[in-house]
Length: 506
Image (tube, rainbow, N blue to C red; front, side, top):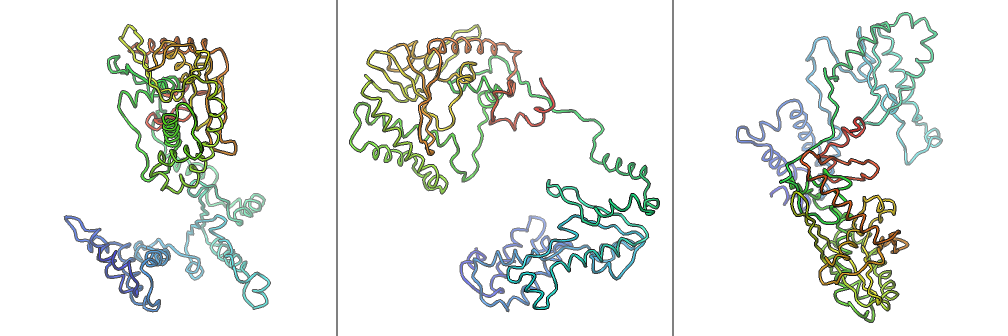
């Protein structure tokens, strides 16, 4: 609290250091040791103490500074502090910089960091003086440092025994060998120096083999695809039509969520993801249809936008939602109202978010299929049209025909069975998606091609086969059994998909 209070105002460096050190020592303290004993111990502690002493002694020259600038100031200055082991720890080992190496000699010299950008370093960019201006002022060229680095390399390379080393990757990024290494690769094969290599090729290969063996275990067991097969009594007996699609594509996800009861956690203060955006759009359209099931009001566009603002609620406080998804929803609202005006004259009734349930009897017992249908239209000829809202990309006709996107066909089967609450059984004439992206083309109606009755019958038959298959205790809940229709799985990390996907086919 004293440190936070100090940062709220402005003061000289000394006014911040005291509360800063008190807070740091309090955080470092344990039940066994004081914060000072832990914080200033060892080489790092000594370096930190020396840095803070210098800052306290020289900081008065900065005058008064704002507390908000103090953390960035200290972080910037600490970047220059280097923790070094005490001098003389080993009587025969020395770690030198290029300046120290110019003035001393050793029997064996190991040159490290021989990558472009490290040794030699890149000439610093000068935002004020270009090369010609530097020359006119009599200032050295930026390339002079490269020449000096080349001199240091040549001098160190002349030691009796030399080892040249470099990192082929830095934080996963490939590096470029120093220009001197490339020049040596060109010159040495035809030079007499090649005959005097410190390590013969065979010995070098042996050393490289030893180095590789440091990280190579005695036995490598490749990851295997998980094959959980819980008892039938533990397997779910109630799933929604959207979960049926997950069951088809990734049975392991059903195992993790419905059997292990594992729910993924959202990151703290995360932007609205695709699922959350879709839920908000569904909620806004549901409320609009509930408010105006028959005739559209005057200013229907404004009415839907106002309902959408309520549905978005506090998520509009998130910069990403306000900047990207709210403008998209406004465009979606305009498209939806235009579609409503074109469709409603031909409708006898309109229903939104109706629940459905149907029981399928199998040898293992009753299985309940449930659904929540986004939009159902009863036409004047008595037939039904089922529409599903999609803020993402709708499934392809091939995916629907193969049974990997069974949501709409199963909803059509439920409608034909009279399983949708409050809706008399009737044939479904049309299945369609409303693709509500809110982009330059904010919406589009995407009908599901094919005979609706045939799609519904095939989906229900496929579901019965799926239930029967998993009623066998030997059937495992595999992770993404068909890679062509896998997509991204919420539980892929739990199934360790990256470990086995590339090396095991079964």
